Length: 553
Image 1 (spheres, one colour):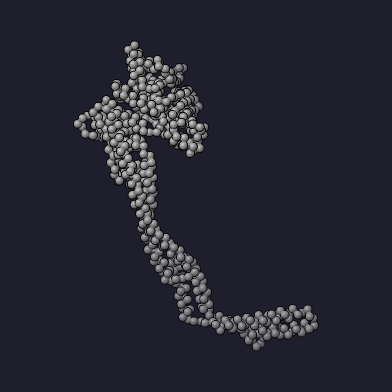
Image 2 (tube, rainbow, N blue to C red):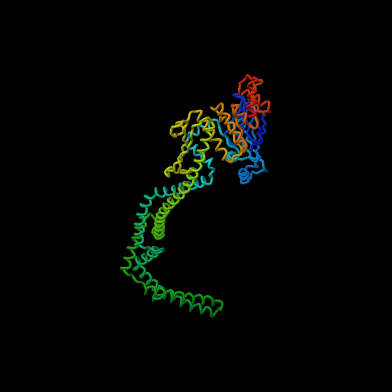
């Protein structure tokens, strides 16, 4: 629960330090005194938007801090532990706003993003504003109220997760489907190209071999003549072949070596040269004997080489890259076939995820229907107590799978009849302003009982209510305060008198400056304040007596 609130230089507040107790706390004051200022300051701590106008004129910054006891709020304790922000059983939220409009949020002394303050704040406090009953006319708010009462968060999370899965897979399917036409065109082209290259069937490295063999056969005649000339030079020239010259050199060297043994190396090298010449001649003779100049094979090579060059030009690549390009195209064609399989698989996934989503959505719908029947009875009883004895309230829950959303497939409508014999009609078409505020207040109080938030704030939710109805509202809020901390800003004595404690808001102006204060009232002060609310500025013995009776009641 909220234990303490400290406010510095916020709006027209210079300094306030307020201690809060369990139960229902009534907050009253004159019109314009700033009864809602503590709630506004608290909202700042909880992550509400801030700007430079919230800083008191003349001050450099506004600062608000709120201390909460977490003894009965295990969900908030777990949140703090999960975010490494826990500190014993207390939690302190602090917010500062500079005169330049910049603000900072702190949790237990740790600087945090504003989003974290908001997330934690939702676990600590629920605020019901004076115009909350107008929001009830909107279908989405009606759904929120019903879900708050039903308290089926696990079902809501399952439906939301299923919806997100459906949307994600549908998005993938849509993207793949949109590119299907392009894939079909590309696949047709690839099939033609791959079939053409399959038919040509050029293996890796084959083009280089063809090119080399074609070059050899194209120069076959010149190659034969050159080989014969080489053999003639090496061994067949009668006037002096290489072999005969080396032999003569060997003879001469041997004679020299007989004169000087140191020349033996010359003899050895010439003998080796002779051997190399003889082996070269033998190699040439073997090559020449095996050389075949087949015109038909040459024509085949020329045709294949021409085809390879033509295909390479068609694919805008070099001929020696054709075989690798062929493999690349086949791989791409295979991947397109895989895309078609993926498309079929995604269609099956979409259907399966849709079925799973609808299964959870139907469970959620059934839970809403059960809770709607319970809420129908409680709200009907509540509006009877709130001076609408013939009124009847009902919630229509309609399941329609075409309305799929993260909140399920239900359309919700609050129906009401205020007079006997009249049919149930939508709330917006039947209820007057006063009736709407009473119905809205009844729903807020009933749903608040089912919400785990330990502190609830009602900011002038009793607008449009008076007399005996106001007394019933006061008793409702007090009963709620028996199990939950309730802060209620009100202008009705019948509501204020039901508080377990009472705080008075006062505004004073001095030396051109305005300042608001908020002080707890003792019993006698409460009687005087209730008398003021009953009779206005003129307090008589009768109004004091009525106030005393009201407080005792």
